[in-house]
Image 1 (cartoon, rainbow over the protein chains, first blue to last red):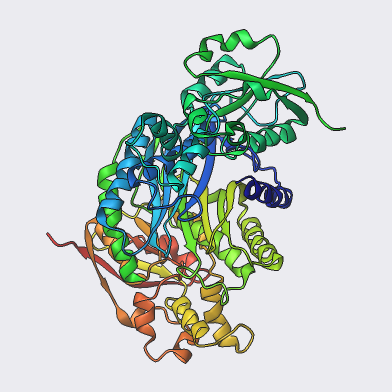
Image 2 (cartoon, rainbow over the protein chains, first blue to last red):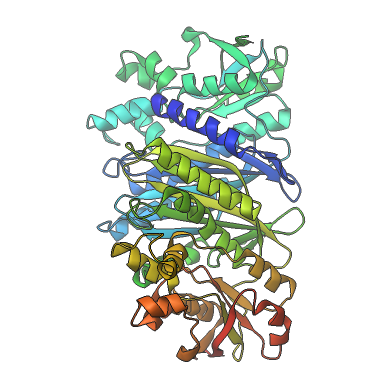
Length: 302
Length: 302
């Protein structure tokens, strides 16, 4: 997952260079969790994600209802990472022969449930056939003030929400035969992978409180996502490994949970930088969103 | 192609019913060439298309530069079909191992060229790996007044731009071993398939002149696209087969060019309905955009 992300990053850097442009109405282009254009009142956020069968999900392991939810929610997570509110979605979907109607119903049922929970409306799309299922979702959101990846400063406190590594541990359980409904603790890990929750309310609260200098969601794993924050902000970072937020569930099923917390991906939590002295602004968020300070931004390499 | 589209249509109808919603800022949802939300000054148009290797294109037959162009241009065609101006694009791309750098460079070169020609800026995206190449593009456009599929009335004159069937004839040539640069007339057909041009200027002119009651692009073939116009407008239609705009090239290579003109797809021309008596408004467009009146809207089935 990390390797993929690093190769992806190289290609993105060259595309970004090639396609860099200023244009009327464009606020923020390639390189953050979402692009930003001028909207009717607030900024308009745009993000897109591809999910491909046997690359991003395994159909036999992923109940269609959860896959429908996750397809939308990973995009909502990108909007959350900008401190925005998601509003509309477009769906590109390729289905293969042999998928039964129950699968299609389950997928759309999950998509609809996740959309309703977030107040998002599906406004268009494109459907075709293929050898493997492809789900491409684009989400349009809005934000009064949005939070970039690039605003962190040396000395900033690094916070993360929720638990890290649970999704990766859930995937490992699934691959070794674990299924929902067999064990309460295992279910926590399986759910973290199958049905991650986008941290929209946390993102909105951090935007409202003007508490985060920079933010990203933990989709590729803490190590990679933190690297993105550092590169965009021109900082370095120190992480206190003892402070990694590990769930009781991951401790029970994994001998080296720190490895998954650092390098496993798909937790879709928020990772953000707060100016020292401003921690009090987020004090009310610590408990409801399980925030944990895990390190500090440092000076970047010169 | 038509069968695919009809199945797609059934699924879209059920999705449209399931997901129908009113929401602040939403002007037009599922079912037209693009969705419309409120923009900062004008209406904001949104459209998305999936192109999948071996379904929508064959890598060995489609030079990467043209594929890059076409991936964007099919989306620009949807914006053109609303009478809008395309402004921004998001790219979802899955590449497979074994693609050489020249392919990736060619693809992005074509994408960039098409974007620059249309004044479109690539503002974000998502890149991953897969067994087959997947290109998912979302385009954001704007329109002062946009043109729906649903405004045609019985008696309206049906116009279409350009030639019909050339793209389908080009695909047939490609499949039987034809390649660019062997024959001037064949090149016209091959180009129509490999490198279709979105009719943005025509769409904008029709919007400015308030000349079209309803419009769609001919992506699925005249018969299917006209059916969409009729269904959305609640009309029927009569086509004069003698008036189908057939190119000299298609007449040379195809024995039954009418069949391809009617049912072949991917021409990406504009098909639109004009009130009788208002033809004079578009008189200046007839020559530059090769407009041809091919029939009339009739009363729908009651």
